[in-house]
Length: 409
Image (cartoon, rainbow, N blue to C red; front, side, top):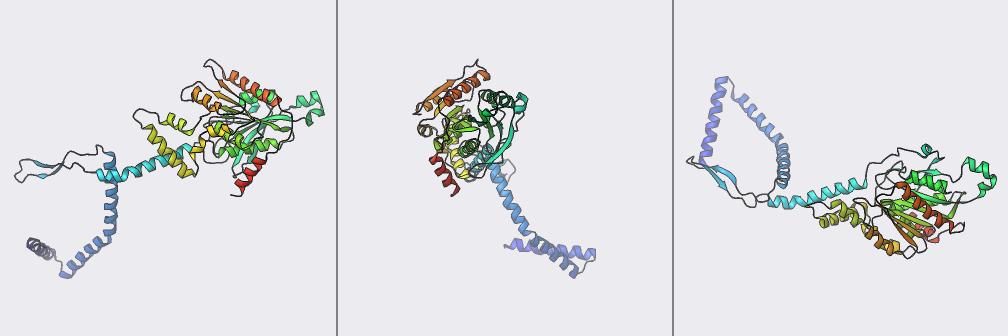
């Protein structure tokens, strides 16, 4: 402590004593007041430290967002003669802060983005089959990984059919079809198609995938875990006495289309697949999402995929459907391309269908075509495929082996 500081401290003490004498305080009272003030300052010291620490964090985050990175100058002091201010050129002020906080900010941003995209708000069905005069019942079942699923089951026959054909119709086995809606929809999305399939003699199961509609909460994985939901729906239909287990088809839209192809590669007993608005890979979907002016699409897509893999402990590379369709042998497939904006282009779907060794068709929707015409084409395809196979109960050893492996993980 310098000499002038000592003299200043002595002056302050003398001034305090004079003030105490004028106010009638004795030395003991003054000493207690000074000690109390010092105790209060010591007690508040940790809080002042925390406050300064939080202020530094807030200031660092503020510097992160107050671009440009290089600040040209800042005011330091006024000149001694009062003629003007003195500026200091701090060319790299805040750069280190930004270098340290930018990765943390990006990590928090992508974690939030992946969480929002894999936990969408469930959409509840606004319509029911009863509005179309169809008889149905609510069903629920559980997938191999414990996910509770809900759906509507439309039996292939009605009371009028039993009256017309007698009891013999009760022993007949009918083809079945599982309808799976896309992301952001509920199982009423395919109600018009369900009515056409029901009239054509199909047992229809309309299912809500995990985390959507009336099914239990779950994480959306764009088809990876949803394949278990489709396998569970197929097994549910296969266990009904009125359904022919060897003539079960699956129709999936968007994300459910990818899950349908995955499920068919695991269960060869699935008769046919309809992939409606399918994305050949997750990269194609992310390219559409991040394709904005000034946005580095490739970098954003890569970071999102890495964050997806870490958070969900899945491999997004499995959503590349080209190796999946190459494993489909005897199953017939119909690929439906919707000619709308922000949808996969026909060449991409044609390239995906070309990798399929079995019989397949690609239906490119005309812009003037109505939903009813597309549904009629899908129904005719499933009718032709299902009628080509004799009714028989098919047990898939590959599916049983896969499910056993999942259970004993």
